[in-house]
Structures are given as C-alpha cells and as structure tokens.
Amino acid sequence: MVWAHNIVGVFTDIALFILPIWIIRRNLIRVTVHTAKVFLVFAVGLFAIITGILRFAITVTANFEVNT
Image (cartoon, rainbow, N blue to C red; front, top):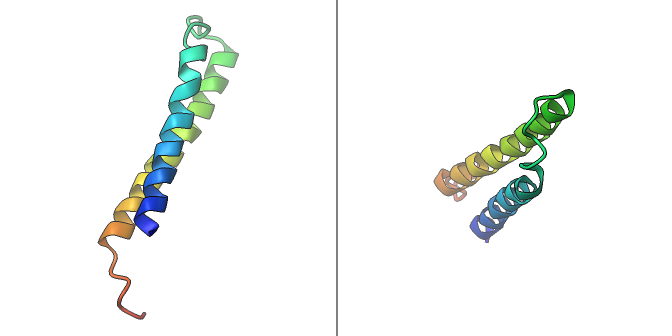
C-alpha cells in the first residue's frame, strides 16, 4: 500500500511539472526576470520529483519488520 501511494505521488508530481510547460514554452523565448522566476518555480517542482523518487527508493529497500 505504501508503494502505491509513493508511485501515485511521483506520477502526480511529474504531471504537475510537465503540464504547464506546454503553455509556457512559447513565452520563454526572451530571457527576462520573469523567465528566471519561472525557471526557479520549475526547479522547486523538479526538487519535489527527485525527493519523491528517493522516498520511494528508501521505502522499497527499507525493512519494516525490524522494530528499532
């Protein structure tokens, strides 16, 4: 059940990262301050994706049967 939750979370993060790119890519031809701000927002989204993948990898490899 935990695996399914992690997989759905990663796919949701990826979808939310990719969907705005189709709309924004036409407007980011010029390099402005606005462009830099948009890239920073996408960097935060990419960080969320990487964190979700790492959380999934730790969940898969962890042994939850050991009481620590």
